[in-house]
Image (cartoon, rainbow, N blue to C red; front, side, top):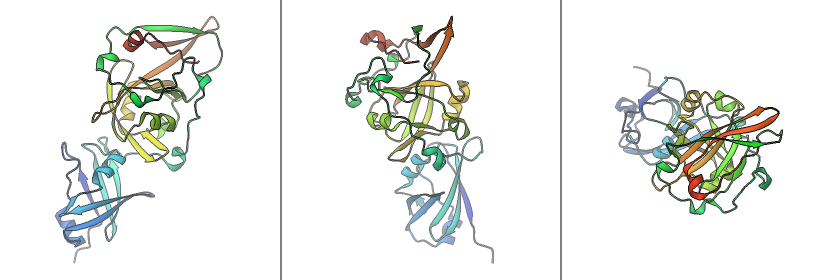
Length: 292
């Protein structure tokens, strides 16, 4: 008699991310009946998923969302007995998807202070306005130089609660390139009321990138799938400073974030900051000057 199966894998075809079934031969081995509940484990994390007539049901969407599963990925399942399974996710590169370790996730950004920004609006993002694409993708964006005679470096986790565009400023950590994830400050995710799922990053060249916002727990949100391509294409490196600004948030649509690189330079002993004017700077007649 042949040994029982211990592994199977599922490819995620386009349009079928939420309609996957177990192999019929594996179902026969499980002898679990028409309806049952499986536990899917990755390390110490577990997801409970219903199996109805061999198809993943309730709980599967949450599993897909929180593990950043994308079309063209494939998932390898290892049967541990009963309805218990371990799993690994592989992306289009055929490499195992990396998730932040416990020690990485414990990094917490420093809370912001009012003095960290020259101009700060203390109104919350409760009434975050909807903006059309041309509000942040103006074809007539211009570079500007802001002269500031101070020797201090950019402080991490500088933030604002601007009514229209909440943002924070930080630097890229080694974990961004080792594990390819970027943790967002708790005060930013809570204040912006962000939810897990797809997010659109807009770079300094007005190119759009799809990334996944993943929730580890109530205190940890991070960008995962899609971040690697963004970092590589923009030639970013450890220590680079950036501004992460929520510029569009509409119901049933992915939030849109402007990811702007901040480049402090020195000339004749004076420091300058290179940035870009946005169309809303002209519309609202204000300009936030970052501390460098």
